[in-house]
Length: 371
Image (cartoon, rainbow, N blue to C red; front, side, top):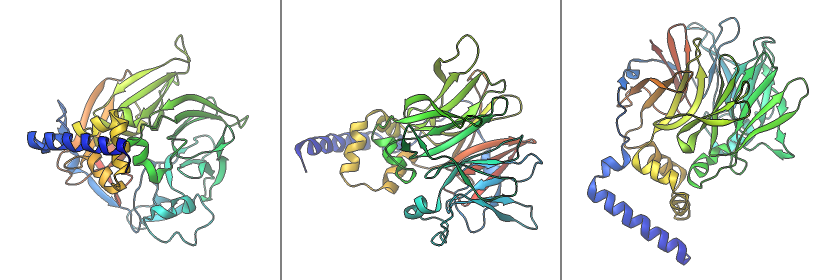
């Protein structure tokens, strides 16, 4: 072990001892959010039989679904209580080894569907597959076909989320990192990686344009109701960025909102407001690690595994937090499951017909909360 690692490890150890003597629970417990409501524990649970990690949820033009992508690479459709979940699509043709609900070592083979969006005009389902890029499958499902697999001559490493502009026939999508893949997501957070991008794909010209670079874990994507701006979550920085597409500020980027944790997907409701799912709230320790890449790199060199590092970020007691933002970026409402009794590690919140449909990248079920 070289001297720089020894010095860094010593500093980390001293910090840990100091914090532990002061108040260890406070170090790893996120502070309460003013005005937050402890209500998500009342959510109904809809199990995803034989699968794990329904990361994104979407309904088709006829109201069917929801559809969701799971960790073994499949897109499933909810057909009601009688039929349950049925297989709708897959993103990889190589399915022989894809027999386990959750196998990180096979994600690059089986695919890992993340963000999902339907094209309302064609009925096609677009899929952001973390390993295989932007894909599309027709209204009847089956094997998804390639749309975008590389940008600027380099394969996409960590395709994450998207939104579709029906007026412009454009898809806005995020690539979380050009250095790390999805199964290495903790390395994106800990290393100070800022290679994330926001891009747009023109369906008519088949051209991809990079709109924003140097993002710290580019994640959820959502267009405003009038199409004047697009939002992208910057997970490591606890913020939502806004890129103006039209009007006097076109081309400019600003901070739309700062949220109290690690933002995942963003979804707009019918009124033009936005729901942001927080994978975890930000504890003092998680915020400190996010702001000091040298500390994260040291932990990596010291041999901590991904599960241990994830636990340090998730906090003392992982639970669910959903933040509702106005079209101006103001926090309107925060809903939580304080104790994690029902929900935790949520990745998306979709508001539909008086209910919140709540996804999770890690759990074997989705939540349904009545507003």
